[in-house]
Image 1 (tube, rainbow, N blue to C red):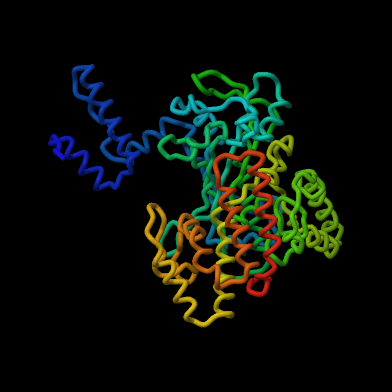
Image 2 (image 1 turned 90 degrees about the vertical axis):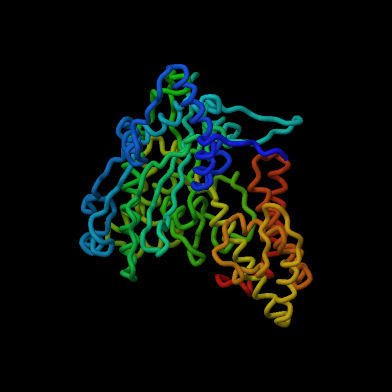
Length: 503
């Protein structure tokens, strides 16, 4: 193959790309910027100078010239936070290391920034529609969902649903585990799925940083109550611009004005944070551990239908429970209040989403989305541990060596991890979500003859369900298959009760 000689400038670009470890997509974008600079200089017949020589300088310029990107800082006065435990203000501030600060952007301006971005004009949906392939309905993105179609019918002609998608997660940002952050991200469901999650399109925006609140010791249940109260107070401040039930004028595609109706489409979080958002108790020992419904925890192994509205948590139901519990507490019937909270697994806190009008527009109980990394991935990790314990109990130590050899002897395949050291959790160090998915693909071929048939059927049911739920497009028949796979998992899961640490 004949090598093409690079110019000095091209060689500089290539060296920079290698040193910066640019991806293929970022390098292509980098080349486009350079070429546009060259073309502009050629057309203007004069050299172009870069105004800012440092990355920080250009960041400061972008932030300063776009008010919608500016972060507002607010010191939280815990003495004014609703439902904050009385008399515990000083103790709380001492535990968290001093006054707390909420940093947030104007949610209305952030939404407008995404909605009006020229890069996203061609991939922005203004109306929902029913999608069909081969005569069968297909759910392919948010615009094809029943949620959007139903909401659109309730709005005036010409109004646009602003489908807000939020996500938050307490995150470790340093290797020593000491520095942590609690970011809240926003994107719009109006942007097509294949574009809204890619960094190069800028459709995902950082909306806020919740104050990080943690105690290094067990100081009692009052700290958790204080943390819940501060969290919902902060969230109410962030959502405040959209509190009223009305249409909001927003500049959108092609710089036109649109009458938009903001509504919460999804909120992605791990299980503990979902319970915090919903104002519910968490854990296997609570009566009703689901933040979205009131199914008893002891019945979680039984299939349930979310078409049954009686079992769903709704803003109206939760507000009634909260009000009743507070009345009992204020009337010195603390025991009855705690009994009610225990029965329905609720915490008495003024939920930020209840301040929105109407409440159903920001229905957090309907919007909560299962986190495949922490929740579905957590279930698989749990199953993996149970299988490990089952094999250790039923077989000699040589069985583990044979399973490890089987995994190591599998032929390498592009983009799939090779598990040379073993396939169980104890054999892996901090596996990523992608690595756990690769693990699912080879688990049963490696262990099928070391576990009972019922255990293999249970694992097969869960893996099938996981693969089906993480697809990009769903027909009605696919949803039926998911229900069947989940039913198989429930049907055969009893075999692992003995090996489950939480059973």
